[in-house]
Image 1 (tube, rainbow, N blue to C red):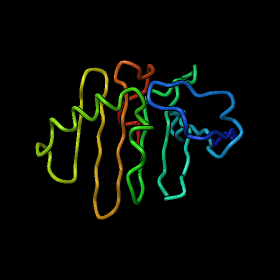
Image 2 (tube, one colour):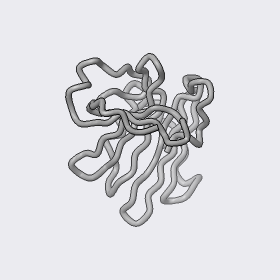
Image 3 (cartoon, rainbow, N blue to C red):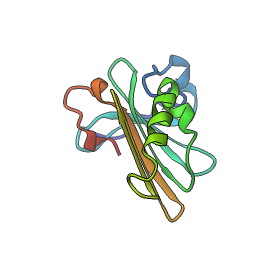
Image 4 (cartoon, rainbow, N blue to C red):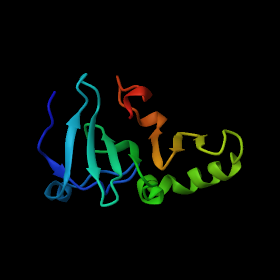
Length: 138
């Protein structure tokens, strides 16, 4: 399915709801070609591409990022940031220098860095819509 030309700023956070006022800025709502989940994608001034995966009611159940720097993880995770931070501190040294994974309760966050290329994804396991697999979050 092609891109919808609905625009929005990636301002919602994980677990938050996209606002109708978001329709007047620079993100594009898309659906994966295989008929996968809908997501809103933006590229910031630093070249970081952020995808917010939204369910039918507009709630963000997952986010992903890739680019030459880390995005503002605190903003992306919203109320889940402290859970991530505590889990990340507890896992230091367990996965290696360039990889981090936090799985605490409903929250799962994966982060990778390689040669100035940062990528990662976060999702709320209990909020994944029916038919959406973790592998769909890219």
